Image: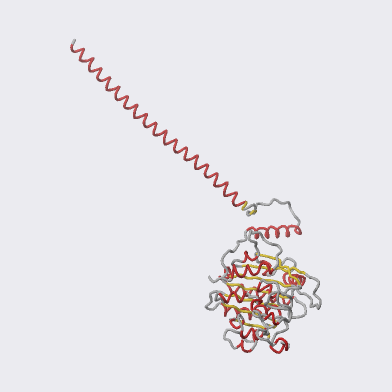
Amino acid sequence: MSSEVINLDSINRQNEMETSEYDLSQTRSSKVKRILRFICTKVCAGIIIVGIISIVIVCVAFLVSYENETEVTLTVGVLKKDLSPEQDVWFKKGLEDLESALNAQINTKKARNVIMFVVDGFEPEAISLARVRKYGTNGTFTWERFPHLGISRWNNRLAIGTAIFGGVGAHTGTSGVDSSVLSNDCLRLADDRTHVASILSWAQEVDLKTGVVTNGDIRKGTTVALYAHIANDSWACPSMLPDQTQIPGCLDAETQLMYELPGKKLDVIMGWNAVEAACDSEHTLQKSWEDDDTAMIIKSLQVLTTESDGFVLVVICEPTSASATGNDINELEESIKATMSFLGNSLDETMIITAFTPYFEQKQDISEDESRDSLIYATGGYSVYLLVTQEGIYNETYTFQDRWHTFSATYTIQPS
């Protein structure tokens, strides 16, 4: 009997041990399953989140690349039918122009240097004819490929030089003075408050190098407004001043170029009738250069870029005959090409402007207003700001007098 009891007890203990081991095994298995479920949940959630983020990034990237401030900036594929060769050449050219415009990079670097090509009296018809003769119907001049374009409106009653270089409207026949000075008004001219400072004066005030190059008479025309303040454009030298103007403060253009600021501080002066006293300066080039515009400009740049913190160079291009010819335009083209080649790596920090001025016939009676538009082309550092309003909208038409002073004083004439 006792033996049977003992066997039953052993069996019970064995059953209990097996039950305990089974429960432990079940517990471990349950824990492993919970861990596996947790890991699977995490992995699945991670995959879903990564997938959603990837989709969002792709969508955002597509939208950003396709549209930026409501302007299309991505060239999309174009489906076209088979075109004849005569049509296809224009179709391809249109797509090339579109792609070039869409991929244009706006240079917002601060302009360290400024080069202005002011082209006097070149009518659009003469430029168009010269372009066709040189490049054919599909060609363009170098300046026509500049990224920024504006239209300037001129009036026959206003002094062009003062408007361009000083940003102030003044009476035609005067230079470097405001509209309070009438023709031959020497008494009013003696008041310094009537004098209009030019872009060269602003440049010299911040210690930039300055230069003037012209293929015309440096004492006459548009150039005079850069350095002089006169009430009659014919006052080129002392002998041309009438007797009634011999009062203190009423000086001719030549005298002001030699003895007054900014003329006497110019680093480069080149043009017809450059006065002998000015040519004694080591920074001034002799008359031997004046027959070759490109050579004059390159030599000027060599002077202005030597040990320089920046410079302003103004190049005045005048027709070599009574009317602008293809040769004049072609010479301008070569000069601009040579300038850009010389600048090399500093081109992106140099603002280059090509401004065309219209030709107004000289009339005794200017009581009747006559207005004409001309084009302005700009490239290089900060050039975008020359042709943009404060709201960031491009102006197709604006008055030079309204824009130039702000452009020159605010954006470019600042030392680095």
